[in-house]
Each structure stands twice: as structure tokens, then as C-alpha cells.
Image 1 (spheres, rainbow, N blue to C red):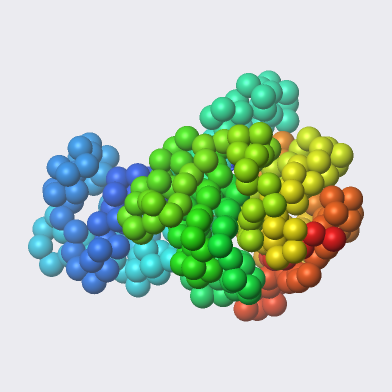
Image 2 (tube, protein in one colour):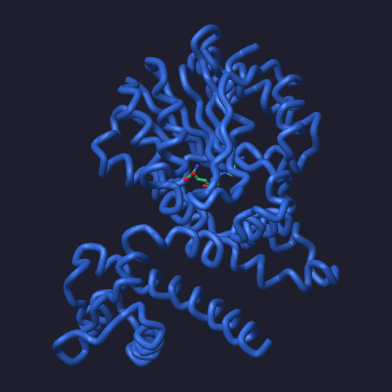
Length: 342
Ligand SMILES: C[S@@+](CC[C@H](N)C(=O)[O-])C[C@H]1O[C@@H](n2cnc3c(N)ncnc32)[C@H](O)[C@@H]1O
């Protein structure tokens, strides 16, 4: 029991420290220089950091063996675990702790009805870190982006749209893979939109792509000319946002997405969650965390049968479907759906 307590608390503190180090620019500094050393003095100066807190954080990260002392005093290097984190492990920390940490710390008050979700909604999620965390967690061979891209690029496309585009890293890859002439990102969060526009400029796609700062539910009101125009519409971990308003509303939202699709070649490619495999014993433990923070933010996730009922009611036909499992064969509940107009 003592070990369970110690390990669980150490995991909590370490996770918070990893996100704090992201806020300080520490992982960014190492990303450019994986095998090199970072000077804490330069980091503190460049980012205007409080040195005694930074030193405390770094001493802790050394003790947790993510960092190791460099050759010169005041310099640090990455350990092997630290390198793994910087090369591709940071996403889940930014998503869960950075993006949803606010609401997770309010679980007791929410359950006790001391606070209402509606009152904390505006600050319940950190949109920038949800976007960045999902992006980092989804990049890489065999991960969610490549699964969606393989489907999205299965046929030629002129106009592509990514719903809830977050950082727009996926939109960049989508436009590049499909060689589309026009890319549209739709994003409700102002900070995520800023990040998305920076990404598109940085990738040299500022001209070919636009970011619509709006709710997905209003796309056709804002731009009626997009009806029947999109060859591929993608939605990665976003369309479930419609489910909290009830099944009938979700059907209407999906009918509106259907109306965006080109009548013959248009496809709606989604990566999202189904919950039923997560209820079994062979589910990856982090995926239950994913379900919990959705539940605590009044979001609904559907079972496979509910998704199917939704597609049927909205006039969509599933042409491809695949659930992602871990290399050890555990369920993640993550599914790719590729739909056409029925
Ligand atoms: C979990 S993140 C996924 C980001 C991106 N699709 C990815 O996979 O990297 C969901 C994104 O959708 C945005 N979003 C949520 N509801 C939305 C809505 N109704 N309209 C537009 N964007 C929305 C959020 O702000 C967030 O950036």
C-alpha cells in the first residue's frame, strides 16, 4: 500500500513538473539540441524566469532522472528518458495535466455541487495546451495523424477542411498529402487559432489555407459557398463535441457536415473514441483517464452502436472503419471512420 501511495503521488508531482518545464521553455531548448547541454542562466534570462524556482524544478527533474548535470556548473543534459520525452512523449502530459488539469482539480467540488460546470466552463480547459498536447500525441508513424492521412489521401482532393484544427499541424500534412489547392481549418478557440495561423505561415501555406475562427456548427451560415464543395472533411477528436446536446442535435450537426461534402467524391474522415472497448479488462489505462476528463467537462462519448445509429440517421455510410490497438494488443477506443454520403 505504501508503495502505491508513493508511486501515485510521485507520478502526479512529476507530471506537473514536466508541464511546468514546458512552460519554462526547457523542453524547447533541448529539442533543438538533444545531446547538448542547456545553461540554466541563459534559459532564465531569455524567458524572464524566477531562478530559485527554476533551480528547484531542475533539481527535482534530475532526481527523477529526466535531466542530468552537464559538464559545466549550471548546465543540464537530458537523460535517456528525458530524450524520449522530448522526442515524442510530451503530448499526453500537455493534454491531460496542462489542458484538463484545471477541471480535474475541481472534480470534488463538481461532484459535491459546490461549483457548476457552466460557471467554470470558460477556464475548464486550456485550449492551447489541449491543441498542442493532442497534436504531439497524435504525430508519428502509426499514430492518429498518419491513420487519418492514409484515409484522407485515398482519393484526389481540391478542397480539404479540418474541423477543430487545433495547432493546424494536421491541416498542413493534409494539404501536403492530398495536394489540395485549398485548405480550411475551423477552430473555436482564439489561442488555438493563433497557433494554427503561425503553423500555416511557418509551413509556407499561408496563401493556400485559411483558419475560420468559428464554431463548427456555424460553418455553412458563415460560408454558404462551401456547401457541396469539400472533397475531404476531417475531424480528429472533435465531432464528439456535438454529443452533449443530445442525439437529435448531433444528427442535425452531422447532416450539416454531410452538406459540406462533394455529392459524389466527398468524404468525412474522423478519428474519435468509442467507449465500449474501454469497459473491458484489456483497455489501455490512460484511455480511461481520457474518458474521465471528458465526462467531467460535460462531454459525451458514444459506443460503436451509437455512432452507427448517428451515421444512419444523418445519411452517411461508413466505407472504412478501424479501431487502434496498442502494440501489446490493448484497446484504446480510438477509431477511424471514413464516411461518404449514403
Ligand atoms: C482535442 S483537440 C484536437 C485538435 C486537433 N484536431 C488534433 O487532433 O490535433 C479539439 C480541438 O477542437 C476545437 N473545438 C472544440 N469544439 C469546437 C467547435 N464546436 N468548433 C470548432 N472547434 C472546436 C478545440 O478548441 C480543440 O482545438
